[in-house]
Image (cartoon, rainbow, N blue to C red; front, top):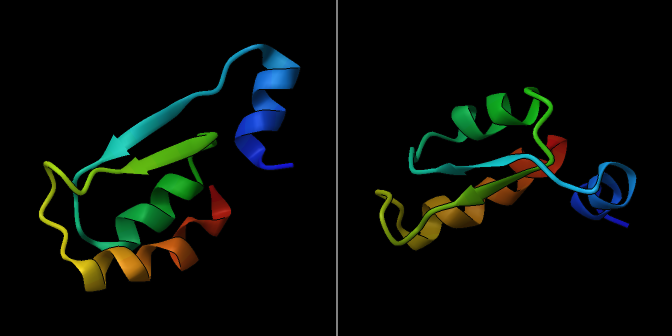
Length: 62
């Protein structure tokens, strides 16, 4: 079970954030903040396909 589902089952809610910054280090930092999820906003953020494909490895801490 993923962290977001576990949070919802335990607390009744999950806390997360939208990310519009295309720096992989920021995604990693967000993972250490205790958030249950991070949404990588590809509609409004400055991402291209290569940047988004690099992000999942950085989000494993989230």
